[in-house]
Amino acid sequence: MCATAVSMHLSVQFANPVHRALLPRPTLLRWVRAAMRCGPADAAFLENALPVPPSAQITLRFVDAEEGRDLNRTYREKDYATNVLTFDYQHWPPAADVVLCADVVAREAAAQGKTLQEHYAHLVVHGVLHALGWDHERPSDAKLMEAAERETLARLGFRDPYAAAVAVAASRDRTGTPRKNARSGLALGSASIALTCEKRGALEAKKAKRKPKARTADA
Image 1 (cartoon, helix red, strand yellow):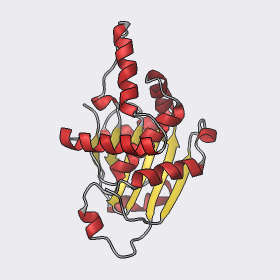
Image 2: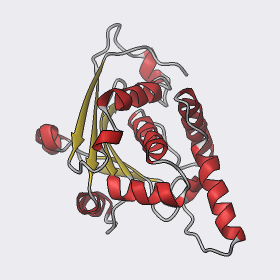
Image 3: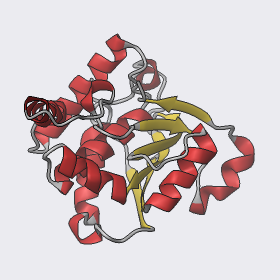
Image 4: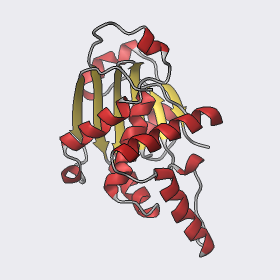
């Protein structure tokens, strides 16, 4: 699906600035726009869209392990930091926060034999697709979402993120090194999360209007 173009307002927050130089705003905007080209998971959102829809509102927030753990514990009752959390309010045009934990991303990139940039690109795309309503609770949905991720990342010049993770895992299996397995190989040794809940920071006022609802990629 190729979505109707909408204007984009992207906010980037570095609560943890450790990878800031690697993630300039133009690069992040390109990744977000590439994911948005997939459009909402439900085509009815496009069919019912206004002739001139309002702008998409996406916030990317990069956090440390402490904040990542606090968010995961608060909204999912999981007492550990995870790689990505998506906080969304509507699927088209999307209004969402995507929170990425720099510590977990760095650990996973090393474990999966990826560069930091390619793993960040994958998780940004993954998080934005969740903001658009894509999910992977059912195998059929997971297959569609992973195909959208592969296609999007290929357009951006990155290799298949799932194949890369599986190849590294298989190599470690052959050497007898144990590995922790996560659904679809998205995050070896950690969990990837999609979560719908209220905004943080500048959108804190919306808390009273939205009740958190969690979606997760945990097996």
